[in-house]
Amino acid sequence: MKRHHIMAVVLLVAVALVCTLAAREFMAMNQPDEIIPGPGVKTVGALSNYLGNLAGTSSNASVYYLDSGKPGATVLVLGGTHPNEPAGFMTAVVLTEHVSVLEGRLIVIPQVCASGFTCTDPLEGYPQSFSLQSKSKVRTFRFGSRGSNPIPEWPDPLVFLQYPSGQQLSGNETRNLNRSYPGRPDGTVTERIAYAVMQLIDREKVDYAFDLHEAAPEIPIINAIVTHEKGKDIAANALFTLETENLQFALEMSPVNFHGLSHREWGDRSAAFPFLMETSNPIQGRLRGKTDATLVLRGTDEKYKEAAQLGTMRITYELTGEPLARRVARHLRGLQAILSASMESAPEKRIVLDGLPTYEQVLEQGVGAYLQ
Image (cartoon, rainbow, N blue to C red; front, side):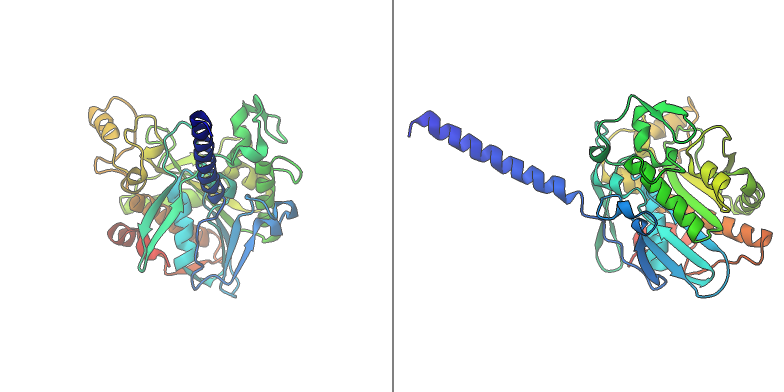
């Protein structure tokens, strides 16, 4: 065999090896994160229970039911609406793995946009995962994309027409779950996820629904509770309690004419009182420097620190950083405050959680201490 033939064979073998390794890594992205049901979880279901055509797809998120067996409120908590907002879904994981319910019922979907956990946003340099030390081992979780995986829905339209309002948005918003409510059973993958969530809210007679988010420090709506107008008094009472604890939250009302949002469509189209919470996450911002798993966990970025010290723009950034533990602690404390305020408003709809860590405990011990 001539030398150039040998080189060609070697090159083909090398290319085949690289393609095989890349394919294995690509397929591994479809393996879901390990979430270990805690003692409070009575049953585990899936979104396909509410819309059958999600079965067998990467969008079929797991649903965890924590039921006291006693009457009271039914509460829904969603994490992972945007899978690049880790404090939202890690808060839901803590609820799933650590909390029990003494009165009422809690339904948790830690990674509701499951498809978005199978990829990352292009050109952002995001890490594919981050790890936490639990009591017994290192737990690794995916850092996903803001929207659903583009492959099942390719190509994005030039203009996204929100259903049923006809509101026009940028084409890539077609994969944004928080623009897709109320969804439709035969729509895009993301619309089907939204439809399944709406079906769950109706069938399970959800009283209070939470959508947990994060945003860049320069975004105006940050460290905030966003509510539909029917939940205004509950949210205001919760904020008053949080203020006495030196936890600053802004109260934002759901815009009436911005369609597709969870807090708007859940409130308009169901009996549930919806609340969305935002924390400040530097890895999502435009000012950030080095972007890696450390930034997810520690939330410390010199560029944001410099901007905060200069005071040249409106940002919400602690000079000590915005660590994951603080962001999860804010979500947990905000959730607890809203539920307490809701019981003052409707005493017959009680929800009592056991094992819910305090703000101070999460700051001191870290998120991993509350994982199985």
